[in-house]
Image (cartoon, rainbow, N blue to C red; front, top):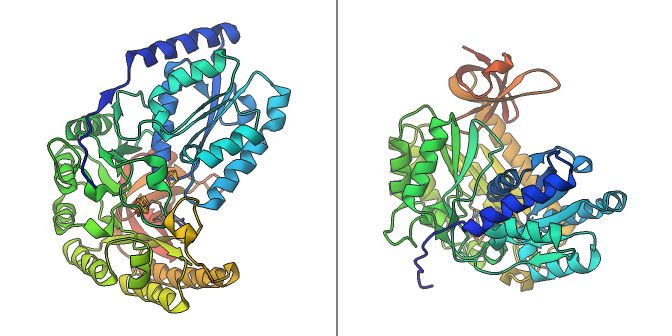
Length: 470
Ligand code: SAH
Ligand code: SF4
Ligand code: F3S
């Protein structure tokens, strides 16, 4: 595929005008009270980061935010298309809004995100959910202010998707959900076309943000007190390839790492096909990059990896893992796995089991294959029954539970630096996380939330650690 050089554009001044206009009309409609928005986000961190931009634009349009759709003037679901289950949940939850709209006809119900970039889904919403007033896809984020204004004033439903999947827009206001843990998108889209995956179709072509823009944002976050920053992209290892002056991902993280401050830097997702030694060296030599590598292998069988179009084999994957273990002391490895890809046999699946035993992952995200309309794999023969796949899936969970438990048990007695993240409502205990992304529960005061502490690991319960502050 030829590489395209894409220059970032700024959010147009026209969009700022629309935000002002929306604030004015809503002030009149609400008789001086602030209008209220409810946003629910499905799917991955990319969507969470997009929702933070949508919230930024809504805040600039005069909105406050509420926790319940019943209290809102504007309800938005930011959707995910990665598996059928994700889509079903959205349809179920949108259906449940019908009565609310009947009771309060003035509310505006909107849907956006990955699902809405699929024509058949947008059509289904149009035909079956007439109470949904606004629909827009991932490529329309930069003119959300205009779409919102039009939906509020035109008296017509606004549906927009599918234009312009090659550009990056900077200057969109962001309202971050957290004050010490945050997301920093470094690139958008994906060019890999794994045969099972819908993401390249709904997120468009791979494009990277300029290095200086990312460094500026990282600096702002660090100075603003962020302690745990995750760089986001579907395949961060190919960061920078489309820039006018190409930069490698390893180079980018070395430059961020050089910013002084007390913080952890994470990233996701790393594609094993181009997880370079240079990157592993950068992690090993860094001051701030967490000793954690999320490296989805999807399947342990070379035959299936080929059918998935993943461009690496088991041997290459294990070599990368071996190098990471050698260079990064006590590295924490996590992965994504698909069970029941079309044509997968129990023999193939056993290769996945043997790979997880060999690597000893800290935790896994495991999925049963879900056919996605328009992807190549959806047309492949898939003779194994759902029941059989379910059994394999359970077997995988059992094996992983054993491995994670053994890994956690081996940490008892160690002292770990942890970031205190939240308080558990039920028990009053604090939830903390290690640099390797393992959860530690401990006693302590909630004023410690958002700070780094040292914790001695006292017990392991399956894959959760118990600790005490030292
Ligand atoms: N860019 C990331 C993954 C993004 S999607 C990567 O390449 O690793 C997150 C995970 O969802 C994938 O790693 C895969 O395990 C899973 N997934 C994607 N499409 C799927 C499908 N059709 N059925 C089941 N799982 C799927
Ligand atoms: Fe999907 Fe593959 Fe791209 Fe990941 S790398 S988003 S799995 S196509
Ligand atoms: Fe889902 Fe879109 Fe992320 S399909 S997994 S929200 S990129």
